[in-house]
Length: 94
Image 1: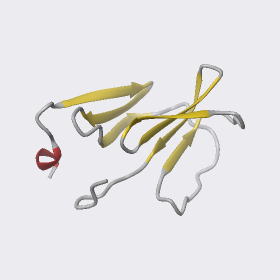
Image 2: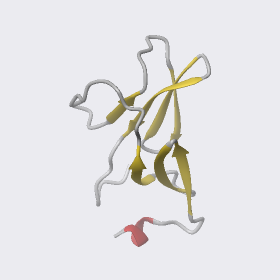
Image 3: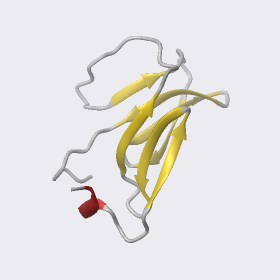
Image 4: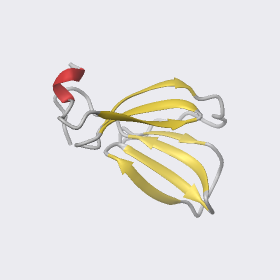
């Protein structure tokens, strides 16, 4: 249940276009993702790591920045090039 995962500091949102990611402030866990993300072009691939990658454009030199547990952004020359979401299922806390 979501209310059991919330800490005392509450939640905040990370908004990328119309893709909204709800983040627990204290633990920095991504609680859920929702919305519409129309800028996605490319292939859907299955990763053995369990992460979901949304690649906005190809980049061999991207820097990766973790902004929350389970949420990593790929940045290349100041531009967002990918969003990586690592799912955590109930009972599977990092």
